[in-house]
Length: 139
Image 1 (cartoon, rainbow, N blue to C red):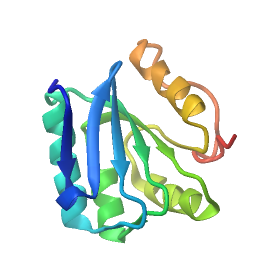
Image 2 (cartoon, rainbow, N blue to C red):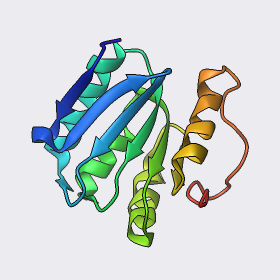
Image 3 (tube, rainbow, N blue to C red):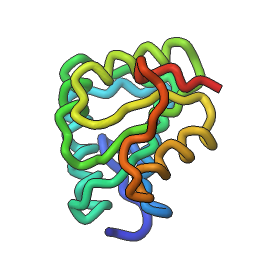
């Protein structure tokens, strides 16, 4: 695992690792295309040392192309993703991203709840029980 932070997607995304969780923060107002998604996934592999880890992805007011959503869904570099947003639009984007994921994916408006959910994947307890629709963990 690499210490510090890594920028990806031409500076639209900043990644860091702490307490066994990758944090990915997208710049509000960004448009994420497939090349941005591929670059972000390369940065995930770099910062995690290639070891799949849970991820908190802050995506407030971010637009993601269909091709980028598909690219994110195909990654094997994460154990689970908690998407942190603040609006109904963020929630819709998260729902669209979860359609083809190969890993647990939940939407949250509370950072504390998102982190608590992700810690279940660090402790070795596996996928936590909870939200049947994959996006309804709203505060």
